[in-house]
Length: 107
Image (cartoon, rainbow, N blue to C red; front, side):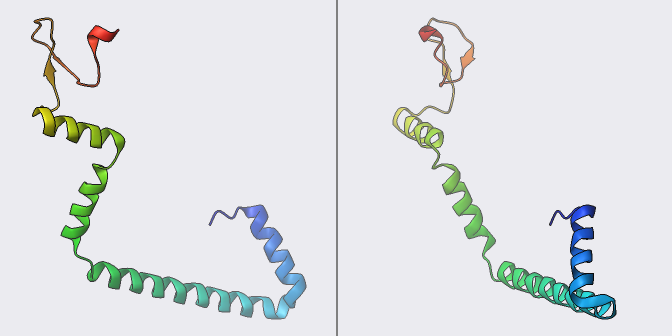
């Protein structure tokens, strides 16, 4: 949360008016205890989920998803059809490797 000093001051003034100076420290302590318990429960849930998770399956899935971009699909298709490894020789007899996306003859 991005609460600046002015927002915090406004919230404190409203709390002072609504709850009074006697109950405000008690309410702040209850709020702090509630926030601490929620953070503890969230970290426990995160630890339980990551403990039960198969990381190799997630890594494989991430690799598959990265290949589903339009550029990845086109690259995989061209590579599987023509056997290209990602670069090609310039067709005018030069020996420099050129990115297959860039066509020097078209410019």
